[in-house]
Image (cartoon, rainbow, N blue to C red; front, side, top):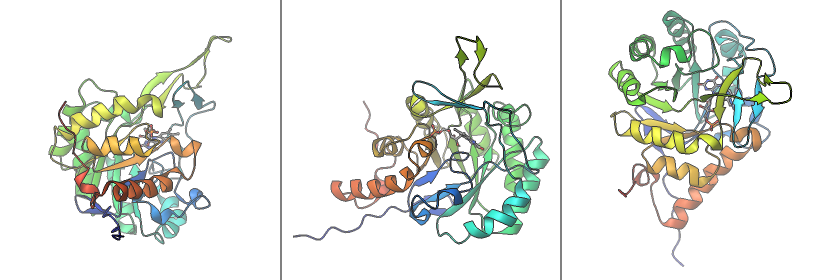
Amino acid sequence: MKKKIKPRTEVHIGDLVLKNPILTASGTFGYGLEFEPFFDLDRLGGIVVKGLSLKPRYGNPPPRTCETASGMLNAVGLENIGVDAFIEEKLPLLKEYSCAIIANIFGEHVEEYEKITRRLCDAGGVSAIEVNVSCPNTDAGGMHFGIDPEITARVTRSVREASTVPVIVKLSPNVTDIKVIARAAEAAGADALSLVNTFVGMAVDACSRKPILANRCGGLSGPAIKPLALWLVYQVVNSVRIPVIGMGGISSIHDVLEFLIVGARAIQVGTANFIEPSISGRLVDELEKYLLDSGIPDVNSVIGSLIAA
Ligand SMILES: Cc1cc2nc3c(=O)[nH]c(=O)nc-3n(C[C@H](O)[C@H](O)[C@H](O)COP(=O)(O)O)c2cc1C
């Protein structure tokens, strides 16, 4: 019997080399270390850590998450330990892993993004910076930056200048035309784009007639957003030259393949981590099996292989 050769799964996001295209999405995988008991994190292409700010943040008051019929609403409000504690407590442990470690960052001012970037790059051990200009649950910064092409460009430029590692700009779906923001980030020096962050939504308790989230609105993620996210990724892939990382509702190997086929060079798994903590490792195995069973020697031949209708 002919011996099957292990397919190639390595993908390149500019200078960032990933052993496979499966990453975990920021805010849904903690600082990565919390998931050590569930599977070998080294199997992943990379871990995108919880969004980091200059100073620690408590986030929004509870209730701040809520389940809906086909997705999850969250208004966590970017709770995190701050960049210095991350560098001191988490990064030395994360550095032990051979997968890419991507730091997701956000600030209330352009200067904050720049300062966080410098601290992370000076510390070493971070493979790329993902710039969140797209969080819908905070008053200042976050999505307020990402819905304006000029501010997106300003943030991107300042992080790019401060960074010694690839810069990925994470886009918001809550805009009229995502292509305009994508092009602005590209022109300002982004090495790659990632999308989508969550869609702004609301849930109401019909008995009490009150919003379920203390913040009133939150970000919708999970299966409900997958077709929306896929369409946005498709449009952005066809509007820029830099690599695109796709996410939104991915919870099966078919979901992964859909994003790769429309042209995403890597994907991130988000809300599904809450349902099945080992899912990202399982998807790495399933991608390898899919390539092997289909006789596809290199995952890169799947990327952007969409056939016109
Ligand atoms: C509880 C929660 C916290 C999140 N925190 C962040 C964050 O800190 N930074 C960020 O860029 N995105 C954050 N996100 C957005 C996810 O990274 C991802 O873009 C989004 O959930 C869509 O993917 P999914 O449908 O697979 O979850 C968060 C999402 C959830 C559900």
